[in-house]
Length: 322
Image 1: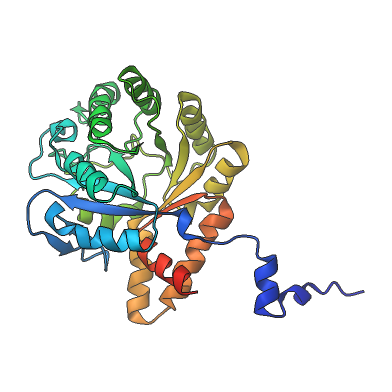
Image 2 (image 1 turned 120 degrees about the horizontal axis):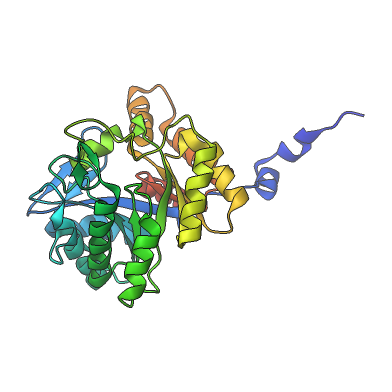
């Protein structure tokens, strides 16, 4: 007897009925770049369709995000001044803090997540305090706690530390609990690789290192077991959500986390992944919409419950259309 698996592929309706994974608007987080200043609405050349906004220009973007029912945004700040330690990150009147208050006042239903890091704020572009030509882990944790509390005071709904410092989650959890913010969740950048796919983001956030690289604190792309160790530390230290970054080249890591942790799993569909699809689409080499949807569905199939993506608005429009 022939096993006729094609019977369940015969029509679109039967394919819909047996479809194992579905991408929904509820899965999406949309990153936003907020720049200090006025009258700023600048498209990022390496990320077509993505812009940096000043607060006086952000409303049109937020109106569209809320109209599309996208549940959450992830904020990245670009300050007007930088220094060696990134002191603007814990300035209660800093650009991210202003953005949090603006969004919570004018778009109260939108869930606001903040990136907690230093690379956009330091003159050297690294993710913390530099000692002996490298990031000093424990000195950076002291400042990370300050930044976390400042974001909490401003009204953030969730904080997401991206610097890959050892002890990040426990430091933030203790800082939040000790100041009364015990209900504020943390999304750990639990498994973050030192990836070449971040290139366009560094244009977007003015965060390229002025010397060296980030290989001493971000993970080696060759390592899989290490990802499990990193995620285990974040889980034990109290992260509420575990994230894998990048996503498309690390689907195996997403599945590892899904299989081994009883927490929501997020992934970050990063700038380089976005830019490649956009560039090939503009050249006419691929069907951009289909490749976009297929790539995001692969992340969902791998086990991601949450997808941070620059495609969020486009995906939401397609899902509403269909």
